[in-house]
Image (cartoon, rainbow, N blue to C red):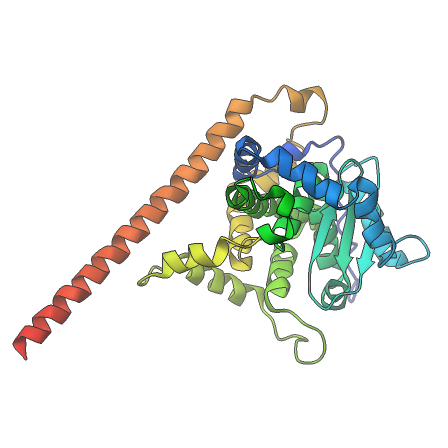
Amino acid sequence: MTGSIPAPRPRRTFPEIAAVSWEHPADRAALQALRAVPGVDEVIRKVIALLGGERGIRLLFQGNAVRVGPEQFPHIWTLHVETCTTFDWPKVPELYVSQTPFFNAGAYGVDDPFIVLHSAALEVLDEGELRALLAHELGHVMSGHALYTTIAAILALVSLGVLPALAALAVLPVRLAFLEWSRKSELSADRAGLLGCQDIVMAQRLDMKMAGGGRGDAFAGQMNVEAFMTQAHEYAYSHEGLDIVYKILNTLALTHPIHTVRAAELQRWVAAGEYDRIMRGEYTHRGAEAKDRPFRDDMTAAKDYYSTEAKELAREVAGAAKRAASAARDAFKNAQQK
């Protein structure tokens, strides 16, 4: 038969899957480090109290956003429910659309997390990319990130002067610890996004559009994932001069990793075979199996990740120093010859 349309591939579901199955080891390590920073508990209590607790946080969006449901953004609601089904998550979190021209989304709350999509995201994403974004945010919910995400987002915007009650605390280390964890938590949620959309190109296309996507004829058919991944590779291996220093300084105050870094990290996770393993049904289940999982395994994996990262940083800094020294010697010789 000619001209037939192939049937859509059935979506893989993950009964009773535990978030630890896909969580990035650096996420769990950074969260443990965050909890160990003196003053973190006090910061959390003060900020939550400042916002009026769980109810106050939710009211911010109930009063100034649109709650998604069968009668409001019904297609988005259907995708949201399907995403919860994919991960066998029993409680469908409340979902809001907030009017804002900036592309973003988030999972917020304390005991009963909810998800917020910025209206700009809906204008840019197609259905598959939106599915990846919804799964990304559900990943945050399943990992218990929402409380810390709420605090990290606030601390990224406020200064010590805005929170005078915390003046006696060493707020800067707390803030930096929150931001470091926040960036690593996004790597975990990106993996959940891929498991939700089940298409690596689609997941990386989401990163690409977050970096520079838009709407209208100026963007239609004008963006290419392969070119974006080439760009990601160039960024990762750019070691000229003070590049490594600039990368660190550019990242320190961010709640999210650089978009090209996220796309490359996702590619590495797939290449390591972890994504296919979960797709085959080989994952940790919620309940006793997740609780009995040896914590030292997570710490070993995190140690390996940070050790590799530190070695690469040291190697790049040493290389940059050698190049700078060589350039200085050449300049000195040239000056003597004149």
